[in-house]
Length: 278
Image 1 (cartoon, rainbow, N blue to C red):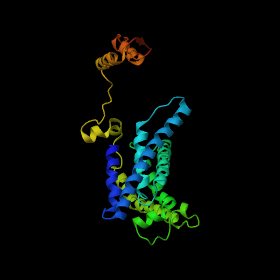
Image 2: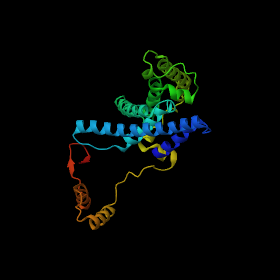
Image 3: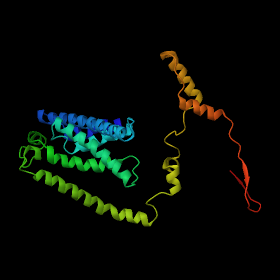
């Protein structure tokens, strides 16, 4: 799904040039493709390795979270979208790196605040959407602004003219207006849904999963592999790479599965006609 979205972003960002009719429009579309790729890759690597490094310091063990990589890439794509046609490739790299950190930080913040966001849509789209809009105020390059829009450019990115912060302030105001518009428009709908008891599903449905209650089946196979399949895989690997030892976890699991289950013991307590099995 992540790669489908990433591929679709090339239609979204370069496609926003609307035409490749001359040298200028071709340059804009090509720049959009490059900045989109760089920012997505930077966000992917940054989010995953930031999570790995922090985990290694905290627990002493390092692992590589695929979810961090995928959502980091999506965060980079969101972060570059606002300025994809007006920033340089090196700026896209910085935007993508910061987008990876923004995603990681906001994702951990939601967990700390006990806010349920199963797919981390808020860190990807909300947090990095705001960062992407602000990034235009920092990194919009005058020459590329002129090619993408017009030669009559009044304000540029703050890094190109530190005495003029107008574009950065405009981007900040736009974020505030978007939040006010969405919040003001959607809050009444959420309040009505809550009053009607439609804002959340039943707690039992939350435990079982909406895949089952709403979509007629589970989306994920949560059962473990069959012991026979594991042994067959080990035999295949042994034939290719030499002797392969059965992992201790699987060996212990096999021993526990073949052992007879303990029989419950009956302890009698001083209650009339009552037996409690322990």
